[in-house]
Amino acid sequence: MDVDAFRNGMVNPAMMVERDNNTRGVVDTTAAAVDGLKIGLVNEGLVIGRWIYFEPQDVTSACSNYAVFGGGIVV
Image 1 (cartoon, rainbow, N blue to C red):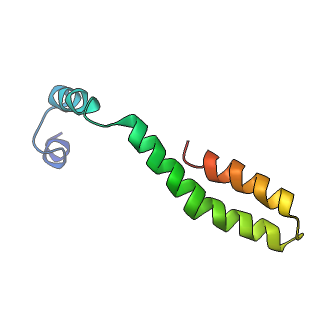
Image 2: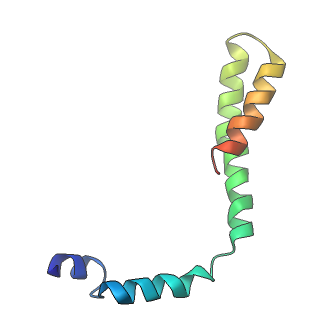
């Protein structure tokens, strides 16, 4: 128990729950979701779309997989 308290900043479990509840309202979930979509569509979606395009040379399949995997990874 002492190691857990030291790792968690010398607070007990009730204080950890209270700290989490206080920080819950601080995060802007809409901005976080938009940032996640940007990351998924720009970083992950492009890699997957390119990889799928070069295998069968099918643009429609590459675009649909880009949209599905790029938008779905961050959810």
